[in-house]
Image (cartoon, rainbow, N blue to C red; front, side, top):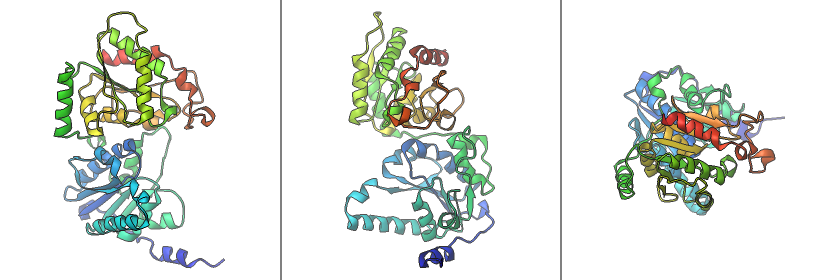
Amino acid sequence: MAESRAAVLWQNTAMPKHAFSAAGLRRALVIKLRHHGDVLLAAPVISTLKRHAPQCEVDALVYADTAPMLEGHPALSHLHLIDRNWKRQGLGRQSAAELRLISSLRARHYDLIVHLSVHTRGAWLVRLLRPRWSVAPKFRPGFWAKSFTHLYPAQSHPDRHTVDTNLDSLRALGIEPAPEDMRVFMVPGAAAEAKVDALLAEHHLSPGGFVHIHPASRWAFKCWPADRVAALCDALAAKGLPIVLTSAPDANEQALIAAVQASRGKIAVPSAPTIDFSGQLSLKELAALTARARLFVGVDSAPMHIAAAMGTPTIGIFGPSGDREWGPWGAGNRVVASLTHACRPCGRAGCDDSKVSECLTTLPVAQVLAACEELLR
């Protein structure tokens, strides 16, 4: 069958291959159009590029709601944003916003585009912006593969962490990250730091003197049951450790915090106070808060990645998701997961996609508490 006119056009516009040279970089664009935690875990790509090409201005393109994960990064020159709400504003406004984005990207004249997902927009942007070099995960032959000068395995091994897999994009160009490049960090900013310091003073909490627990996720199948979170809070508070609870403003997440609070009080001994900040903090403020905690406990979620990035000892409670790919990055952190469910990590939205994960509903409080006690020591 004859190729379509569009297919011929795609082949004719496939990117030419050139030997990569970091010394020749003037501007580079890193694209990560995913969720908050995914964007934060892409930060080492920016750091590595800047270290290997200090003369290069490194920009990033992310969704607007995930911008706080990279804002203030010292190696980042400019942050381009895509608002997920554009599509709800009508075709005219969406088209105008997209054209403004393309115009601002073209004005930067990128030599390199690093695309860190299989989002189709990345392939189109490479064809529109025509950088000298471009790299993306191996996805499918044809249009996708012909869009980029370099490709790397989307996930070479399930036991490798996402941070390391992201850096494969630069390895495909001949750039080998150094250990110092692989650190994930987030910059809260002065305003967030000041607000959190004021909140801690108001509640008579000192830095390093409380445990931060964030039990919620937008995905209910990743959450530990409220009564078990409550039992953990009781056990830690009974040791004299104040507890700070947080969640996003989402109604379901705040309902989980309310259920935790309603289940408290099972240990009838004097205990340290619990402060509820659920729904009250921005992502930057959450980072500033968790940086001041003695310990963070949470499920597989962006706040868990933020805590690890801030250098706080972190315990990640994992159910069906893969902890080797998505666990808290950094030495000294811990993953707690079921020891009796050989089926995990299954990667499903709960058992048989039921939104309820038995590997979490049966996870013992004692197992999580033991991990807390280990890190607290």
